[in-house]
Length: 213
Image (cartoon, rainbow, N blue to C red; front, side, top):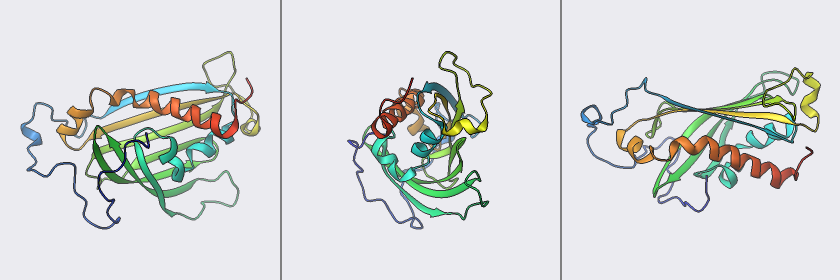
């Protein structure tokens, strides 16, 4: 998310009360734009890139760097890392991170639980206490791929350190907590998954170079 969209207010401490974008009575149930909690929107994008699973996993799991390349993220920091779930480096890892997002002049911060499974997936789930979203789940997956096919292959697990290519996919599921936010974002939020894939590709290019096709 663009660094040009600067935060318009100071991010409050994690345990302090947070103000939403607007302070007025919750009349959501009276609005024609009301979204029931079950009305979650989903988007899916995928692309084959000339990098290894390990390389792409390392970019997505580096949450502290999100402010530098993830669309609409203006600040990002890891708050806590849970101890590894096992002794080898393929075990699941979990952390809590605070992200600040800004779009169309609006800014908000929220905490996500991020589950990283080297070198297969990274899933971020926004806390249920966030004032912005009822639901926000972002899932990245990395699978070995053929350069001539848009589908994953049955390559051996050792291919994670190979030069690529790798099929990267992103699944985004979200529901705004307030209908006004849903109305404001409706025109562009469906493009976010495309923007994230593009930003991810540009980040890999900046970190690793053009890769091997």
